[in-house]
Amino acid sequence: MKGYLYIDEKQIGEVFFTIIDESMGVIGGDLIKNDNYQKYQTVIQKHYEEKGVSNIDDFNFRIFLDNNVELKPEGGISISDSIDFDEIYVESAGNNLSNLTD
Image (tube, rainbow, N blue to C red; front, side):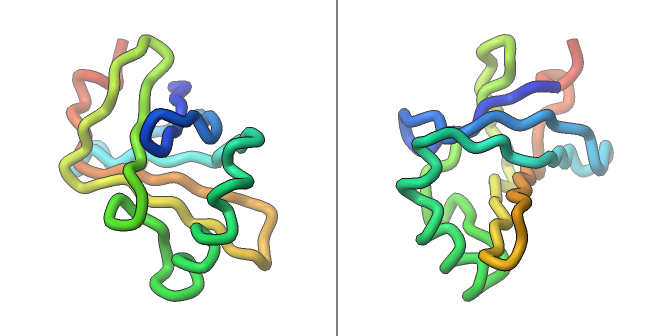
């Protein structure tokens, strides 16, 4: 499923999510970043180096699906972006699966 990742009101990229753990409502996928992501990337990479992820304690991450439904994950949203790799991974846990299937 296609989704869009935001920080506050700014879209920072899109993600083609797959369900990773159905019982826990976990989805994940690689971020296709846009120009807005560059404004946050250095800080997100610093969070990754310090604690393994940048999460909703650091930024107001938001996910909207292609059908404009905003996910409200109880387990949060996190980004893994290492300066050593060219991949940016987004994961979200505790999602209501009824929002994810249609």
